[in-house]
Structures are given as structure tokens and as C-alpha cells.
Image (cartoon, rainbow, N blue to C red):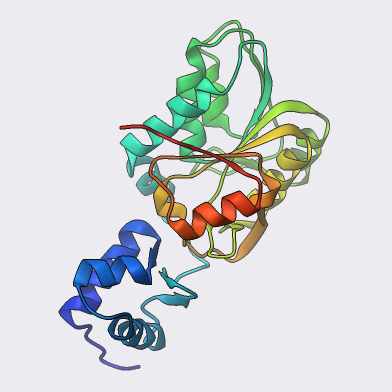
Length: 257
């Protein structure tokens, strides 16, 4: 165990990574007005000390096994979630059938959908079901199974079997992170299996992810950007992720200020 103390620039790099998930080398060069070689030396040292993870073209967070507590996630990035939710709801037509899975952004989408009519919604998120029940024109189907007390998620084999019994127009899925290869990642294996079932059983898959999710590492793989038809996010993508979405034939919808 070392008594490593990052330099001022290295601490600023760590702050950027904590705020954005993934930060490109080019962005750090522009921010700190130093050479790419200087940034790479900083990243190599921070990587050796376990402070972050080096990727081709940048760096991301170090931890891949532990997510933030639900209440922290619910209260963070509220404006970004609101924008994503409004844009996502605009992609849903009245009378559609859809899946909404686990996550605080999915709950924001549920709120944004309340002005719609005659939606058929299947969910394994008790909070989503409660929100949508305010609209009496909706038909809401809630998965059975084990309820997680901390976030109202319904998980387990029965929840997966529930999702597999439908074929919906749209599947709206959240994610813990998207790495530099385009892999869709999550911290919880139960959430992965349910999300994969949603993706299998949807005519169109819409991924909802704020800009902090790009570059986030998590240990369970849900799929790849090529497995989703559309991505809704709150800020313009880096060139790297623009290229990944283009190569994956994934439509990108960015919220306007």
C-alpha cells in the first residue's frame, strides 16, 4: 500500500473522470494545455496506483464492481434525467406497447409518459408501475418475483420469464456504463439478464444514458451498442462514441438546451 498523493493536475484529471465517466486524452490536452505525452504519463501513474483505468484514447473510472447507492443515483443528475425523459417520451406514440426496466432514469421516463394515452407497459420496476398508475388509460403489467427493498426492482427468474412472455413495440433500457468498445455494462447480474430479455423481445430498443455513463466500467456485460436501435442522451458524444454509434447503426438523439 503506497502513500500516493496525486499532483494538482492529476487530481484535476481524477475530478474530470469522476464527473464524466470517460475522458479522452485530447480533452485533457486541451484542458491542461500540455502535450499528449504528459497526459499519458499522468494516466499511467494514476492507473498504476489504481486511481483510474487507462483505455485507448483516454481514461475511465477504476471501480467496476460497486454501484452508487440508489438514493444517491436518484438525486444525481436530475436535470439530465428530465431532459432524457422528455426526449424519450416524444419517441413513443399513443397506443404503443413498451417495456420500462430498472433504474432512476427509467422512473423519470415514466413521469414524462403520463401525458400519453392508452399505453401498454410491462415493467419490473415497482416505482415505474406506481408512477404510471396515475394515468387511468394505461394498462400496466408488473413482474412478479423477488423485490429489492432499496430500489423497488423485481428480479429473478420469474421476472425474466415475465418479460419473455411479451413482444413489445419498444423496449426502454437503462445501463450503468458504456465502455470504449461500445459494450453495455451493468453492476448487477440480475439486471443484466432482465435487460437482455427486454432487448430480445422488443421491436425497437431505446437506450437511455446520460453523459456520465460513457466510459463507466461495470463487471457485467449486457450487450453492445449494435444491439440497440436508438440512444437518448443529454450531451453531444465524443468523436469516439459518435464513431461507435455510426458503426453500430445506432441512431443518436441528443437533448437540446
